[in-house]
Amino acid sequence: MTHIDIVRLQAEIDELALISENPPPVVTRVLFSDADVRARAFVKALCRDAGLSVREDAVGNLFARWEGADSQLAPAATGSHIDAIPNAGKYDGVVGVLGAIEAVRALRRRGFKPRRSIELIVFTAEEPTRFGIGCLGSRLLSGALSPEKAVALRDNEGRSLDELRVRAGLNGELASVAIKEPGRPRPVVFIELHIEQGPLLEREGLPIGIVEKIAGPSSYRIRLTGEGGHAGALLMPDRHDAGLAAAEIALAVERAALTSGSADTVGTTGVFRQEPNAVNSVPCAAMLEIDFRDTDLATRNAAWTRVEAAVREISARRGVQFEIEQINADEPAHCSPELVEAIVAVCADLGLPAKRMISRAYHDSLFMAQVCPTTMIFIPSRGGVSHRPDEYSSPEQIEKGIRVLAEILARYAG
Ligand SMILES: [Zn+2]
Image 1 (spheres, helix red, strand yellow):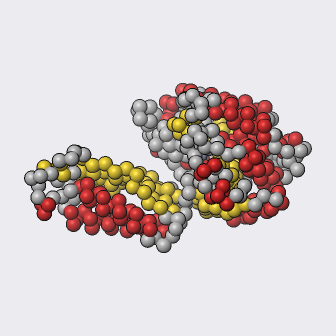
Image 2 (cartoon, rainbow, N blue to C red):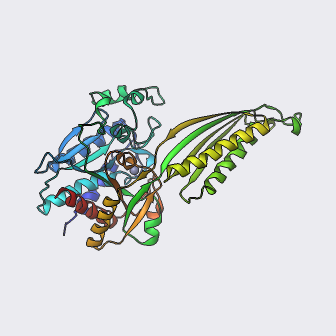
């Protein structure tokens, strides 16, 4: 049996958590911050120490490779991210990076010799904090984000991706990042180990989740312009209240999600602003930001079409002007059935009960699924909590996840 050195790994997780923009237990590592740059150096040193050769692409995606006997074969890849949103915890992303390094060390200890290379990918900026766009590194790798669009990205202080990456020591053309281009080396499979960030595994007392689908997020901004006026003087029949139009639209979003025919459709009006936002004034303008997700693109699109129809109807009835802007739309990912089956078999061999799951949050795997057969291994999150300093998975839970990861990597690389 593969022995996982969970004591050493936990110490490394704890040490990486101290590389943060905030004092412990808070972890904050925003892309290209001092903490992010130091954390990258920490991970690179661990990779080299584990005998991996390390290279970085132009956006800072890190590739750490255990060279297989046959260098012609595409690598079996794993990986995740080490950036963290403000006030986060120490397990999101990190389990899949440091855990993969421990998987490699464990395979070495048992004398495993890869025929196919094993590659750890540490993706740049899975979190959207700096540029407002999640999965920057894997989007560029998969070609879902063009280099031209990436170059145009600015953070909220007006600094460009180019300026910040060069300052962090990353050179080369962003156009060279995409691995989906013909002739560039794609992995044969990609498997991401990650905390669940939801309550299901803990609730059901299961150690392992195997992801079959990843919900695809889309987001929209709706601006409404009505007519304001004095809350006392402007009589009800004469009103074009932008706030009430927005309120009706928020309810239409909920209705469209509830009646889509799929329990996987979720619609959220997370931003709701109106102007002038004064107690004695009829709202003259409103702005909504809406997040809409599903595991099935056609269902999501059909539900959103109903929201758009509702926006037209509500605006016309209330005499309000509207503008709909799509902020983002990513396709859901369907994980590789063969890969999922292979991990189901690994879990059975290891005696670990496993559950097939949907990932409702998105991850770098959403984009890796566009590159090669992909899936994710989930481990339980205490209370389903994540993106908080108290997010927690126990050493025993992490250890089981790494055993599954090590074994599936060995099967593809052996
Ligand atoms: Zn994550």
